[in-house]
Image (cartoon, rainbow, N blue to C red; front, top):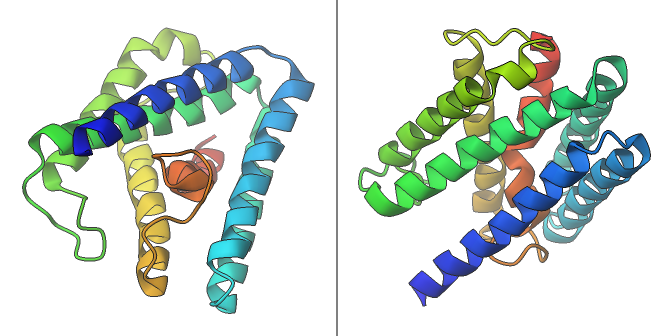
Length: 206
């Protein structure tokens, strides 16, 4: 059963990856705007459903999400669509590295309210992020200066803290998943938790 869930998550993750890449790399503003709006509304809907018993948490998470996607829209309109691609796939590479390395090698648990997070997973997350920035630097360097001392640490911190914010909120409510969509991925909030905080830090960087 565990292996089946792993395969399902890996397969669906690949489909989401390809869909996001095709949309964000299309340079069709209307399609990209609809895609980002869809993601934001999905997060807000799940927030209203799963956090409705805790009004203060729900309101804070809703504002947190709305401001994040507003900043992402500002980045897209004031700079370039390529930066949206940069943000998305920085987060995806970090998430994939953390999941795969944590799943295969993870032993040392370090966070009580998120027991699946391991030291090995965080190391994998950082390594995958650095590899992504290195191999795709030619695509992004004309739009954003990638400092391998500064940028990877900032994005890694953002993706990690973004994930922990939603994990801690779920722990307060004693729920395992914060969504009903994206089977195997815990819903929009679980899948986009690292992106939401990274939008803030990337906006400050640029």
